[in-house]
Image 1 (cartoon, rainbow, N blue to C red):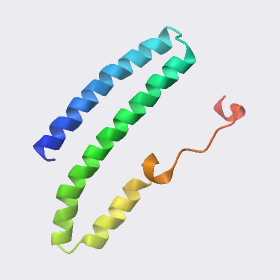
Image 2: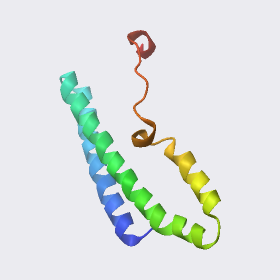
Image 3: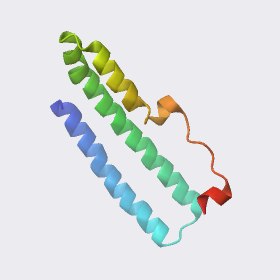
Length: 102
């Protein structure tokens, strides 16, 4: 991983870790649900930003190397498989009914 991307990702992840500890405390203290949900959404957005940093690094390093080595089809397939797990690409998760969450 490029040093700049690694530093940026690690800094963000360490901030997220602290934020997550705060949300865990909120749950332990039975804080008002919408407040907890708002913080969880903020964590998800922060993780998505880290994911974009990792993706940018991947495109700038692994993908460009693969194209140079005539492995474009292989790297595109790999990237498409990885993108299945990215909500920005696949859309929101299906809505659960109350019975499914219990």
